[in-house]
Length: 351
Image (cartoon, rainbow, N blue to C red):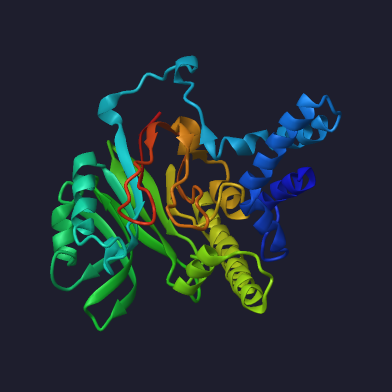
């Protein structure tokens, strides 16, 4: 377990396109960490020297722990002087098509999403799995009306069905839009859009991302629920199917993250990189996307940072990364079960 924990650290450095098994170990990092903590306790009680093996491995990855859990030490930190008039609130939220297909078994889910947003009143909203229908409450006109406090918007559809439904990604803002653009990924409906906003007299750039999904089918989730490790042909086939889907997604995300990161490096303005990365904090995707940016959760979050409600993986896969020119505070992930992702919010300002 100590060796596996050490190998999991390599997931942030090794591109899955060249050697994908390491990415699986990064995904299992929390499990390996937990085992090693247990071993430290056991060996310490028994006064065995093996305790140092796990201690050393845990120490080597000390910085990774803060990507999963943060403890509130605000009283120990030097407080920055913040000009409240210059702050703004950012929300990133994978809304799962506003529950278009009634996965939540609640016909009011879409209304509850808009009620939540209206109550929080964010200044910038990044939606992933955005959906509109030509008629009804989810028409583009109705959604814009729901979000009238953020009356500037940048919407990009990657799929339309018979001209009546649109699937894509969207950024809404109460600040004027100076420029819009997109980063398209080949052979997928996932993408990134970037939007230049004039905020309190300064121009900033928002990157709204939805990186490659694993694309599990219902049969995959049913298999995970029913797995009993019987080593029969059916279970081996199910495990291989899940493994192949994960491998495919790891490789796709690595390439997409590199494309976005290259674009971010050329930005003429301070950047905020938001969205659903579909990968854990100990991954090549996270390291590539973060580059030299701050992580809002690490800077101002507390507790466990998981943002995904699904069965696999139940980790933090939604992020707000920001230029070091920003101050960030009040990071939150309200535990609302309105999608298969929790919304992620924080306040920030230019220093």
